[in-house]
Image (tube, rainbow, N blue to C red; front, side):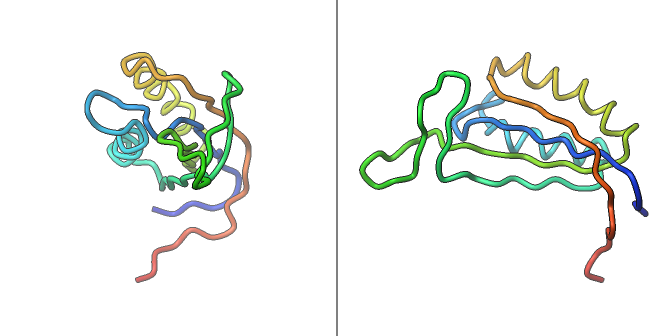
Length: 115
């Protein structure tokens, strides 16, 4: 797959404990992105954050949280990103999880494998 130039970045903010059935929601999103044929996805675990409920989640030893912030980033063309938003809506509806989804314009400078 060749990607270059203008594209879209989907950024999804959820909690570590969010589930899609029995598997973590972040895992389900990445597997769906791969099945959808998107260029790539990365999951990052945060060490501190808060969301709509304004409750602090932190990895500090005195306040261990089992619901640390998770950010999933997915980059692909505008067309594929727009199409994948529908799948994300389905996943969030069926899992009944909260979260935040953003999409922004990015420029791909390089996209290549290590081979």
